[in-house]
Length: 395
Ligand code: PHB
Image 1 (cartoon, rainbow, N blue to C red):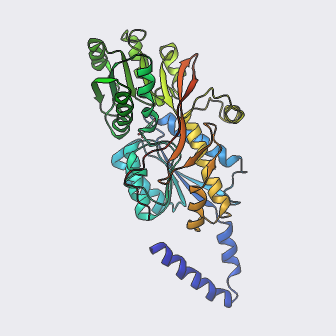
Image 2: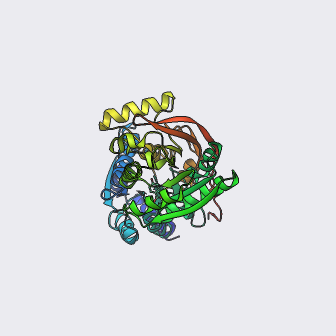
């Protein structure tokens, strides 16, 4: 409402200025002003690599447009959110109030996202979520100006339980970091696994970003489940994979996970990762021209292999490009901008996807297995999977 009033009073002032002939220089200035893009991502800590991959992917999508959005130049403002939830509101506020960004891209960590969500809802600034899967962002706290290009936390694990049950694993232990991402990933796993006839014999957890896994691995060895399923990501995932093998569990109790477990960590984890089966909305080895071209271009630009985070960053860029092009760079035309983004079809390296009504991707979930430092696709675990969007009311 405030924004609308502001816009109206500003245009009224412009009409006045036009009649006096003073308008031309300021209007030209407004049209050529750069679009201000805020990146709020982790650049330190266990998710640092994830933040870099997201930024790389995002920049690549813009580079394909000559670095422009709807014909306008772009200026970046960056904040390292450190995956620290207690600083989420403060960091998002810096980008919105100090840097006056037109769009806020962030973040990775679900707890930090809750801070961004608060600021996005209160300020009305366009907010694009390139990773964090916290349910509330596209459920009870959904908003017309918030779009997620990644997943909801229970989406990747919903299909995992059936995969494990089909392999004959009747009893499983679940282990994760205890915060929204791990807890909501568990919700998806539990639903799918129990529906497929599996029993969860124990839930284990440790606080984020703790990586002292030893006592928990000893407990798993004593429990002797048929399989273990987990949510870990980033540096912590690499350590978990290595510790699992070092504890002598690899080859004895098969390890499964949401696919983040094996994203961006395969060099660091080495052979300890071989044979891990996961479910995820992307796979390195997807045999499509789109994925191959993306992987080649990314490797050339960044001298690194892309992972799911790079894809999500890239797709965030693709979505913003579609929106900005639809309004010819005028991001203040919110109705048209949001409509274009709601109706977007993203031609992603993961496979084409569309937005659900609550602004979360409707996408395929793949089963993958690690072999020779690659997530090899085994098949599709769920086709066009949507999040429930429960409790989302836009308006
Ligand atoms: C999250 O906190 O929502 C989160 C973090 C890292 C991932 C996935 C989800 O890989």
